[in-house]
Image (cartoon, rainbow over all chains, first blue to last red):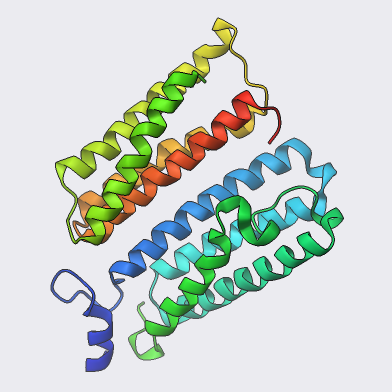
Length: 154
Length: 122
């Protein structure tokens, strides 16, 4: 049974009466929406890159594909509020955070490695720095809306 | 792409996006205005699709990758549909904000599409 505190945390920013503990509060929905758009953009871009010219930059384009998959999984993990998906959300969002920081830095330090733009090049500047800011918001939101095993949804 | 039409789309998508975001943050649920603005953006995208398909017949060819162009266009067309359904199912301030984010994302995609069409390269 969800504890009172968990119910309160889940419902305090909703605009309607308390929903089941698996529903996501308002700003969480915005997070899901932006993650969804980024996942769509990353998937589209990586699809085009791989179809057109995989040979030109296999490392960069494989990374693009991987990041697209991670964004998709992260979006799903934010939607599904279970203990398992909560862990997956943390893993994917942390992976993105590390990815954008590492690839961003490498793309500045050694541009030769990432001559062809990826979603994480120059800290996601090709996407208005959203790939840099979004994982931070994601982690903040996850920390504030934990899902314990007790409220795990079948 | 037809230049004046693209500017028209941007002139509608950007203010619509900003309007929805502001109204949403002010606590307004989706209304005819915000839903209508998003629907208008979507309608123009459909017209854009027809125009892009017809363009080469009029001698207007893309300089960049058509695959990339159409990937953006199809993605852009999908976004308001998803956001619109979301706003119908969940009538809250956040779905209004999401309508706005969608319109702004469409604007960014339109900008990328003009680059692909008019300026060589991806």
